[in-house]
Amino acid sequence: MNIREKYGIPSNAVITVAGTVGVGKSTMTTKLAEALQFRTSFEKVDANPYLDRFYDDFKKWSFHLQIYFLAERFKEQKRMFEYGGGFVQDRSIYEDTGIFAKMHYEKGTMDPIDYETYTNLFEAMVMTPYFPHPDVLIYLEGSIEDILARIQERGRAMEQQTPIDYWLEMHERYEKWIDSFNACPVLRLNINDYDLLNDPKCTERITERIGHFMKQTAVLRK
Image (cartoon, rainbow, N blue to C red; front, side, top):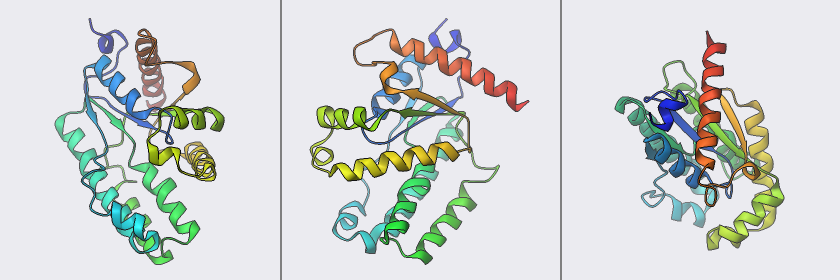
């Protein structure tokens, strides 16, 4: 019996990992997929044709960038479910509208009409009973001090050079977003409660929590 069967996680489950920069989404995605014998779904940043333009002119290209992200994530979400599930996904489609598009609108780098068009499209595509939502969203959380320390220790050069105020704002926005998120069940994991890189038994403990959580939420849905 493998770990997935041991803790009652369905072979067709789709698990999404969310959280701000520095919490270890990619590591969690990789380790969980290995333990569950699932496939991984990572964001394809290199193929994005709008990123360079966006960084040159936020106001001009923010709407285009968010529409591109929405389309790509929508296609990826469909692909995972059409494949029959069995995926761990790095980042969710919900963060784009709940955090990033909203931030551009509030900061004036996205036109109000563009923002309304974007949110209407998002709701029509995603916030419906027909859209295949994940079985569970794992939210990785931690104090801003711990997250900043991780960014300085492990982050990319661009992230380490980003002003601290930006990370403070991101942390606050993520916390507000997850507190009101209800598109699918949410399992919160504090980044100080595990060490995937140095504790080989850690992944199984997390898998056990996921299995227990999924059983609980299945009962509540009945």
